Image 1 (cartoon, rainbow, N blue to C red):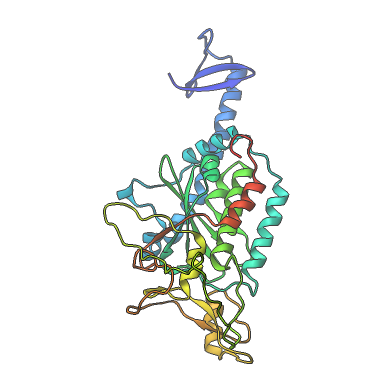
Image 2 (cartoon, rainbow, N blue to C red; image 1 turned 90 degrees about the horizontal axis):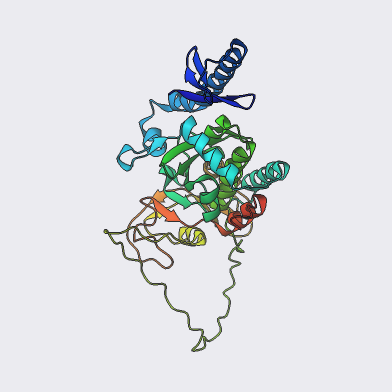
Length: 351
């Protein structure tokens, strides 16, 4: 038995020029056969259009070994490129969730996120080699089967960036590019669902914003040492325990604010970031150029610390399994982005 197609409320099955009424199993009349062929041609054109973005993205970077190693699926882990069939299954799952959303609000949210990313609030660059793995919220996992998101700066000039989406069941990979004007291109364009496209775009930009802008803005050191109160017994400050690396199990996902806290005192890997120098200080042209390449506007009184690895010294804050992001490290979804995405895409069956 071949493919099934419904025409004018009746189901037909078959292939090629041989199609039959499924109820009576008699050959389809000529007018129905013509409609079936027209519908098949339309479906094939849609499949071809859906395949094009995936193929173009792969062809564009197939000769870049580093980019492929960072963005391409890992066959050893059972990963595959997200294809039209997997995308169709995700769309069906999304449709069943009865998610309600105003797409104009989602578009406005994306513009707001991009304005923040481009603003003077940005303090960090995207760490190289996709070291930061941001887990998806439970809501996004149920809506579209999303597992995690990684940002890849390689082959893109800041503030442009690649975003690698990993889906579960099956483990499929889709990649989009955030362009210099904040627009996005990539696998999500193959989807016929405007809602799915909106979820991918808003997730990418909300996570990107929270990756490069601290959730709590701190004031620069003024040069005056603050007098400390004598700690009470009940509120005595305790040093954070040193997290040991365990080879037999995955380390716990870290809170996203720990990512920002650790950058000022990481002992192994330091992502590019702003550093307060003093009133009236103006960085030289080289530091300004380094910051621009990282997508950061370097204000007065600050210098730019380039991304680097180092060894030695004792940690004075959170560390990540003793490696400080030298290897890929998992983080829980950022609170701000999670809250905003929940409001943008409310689903009665989930929230």
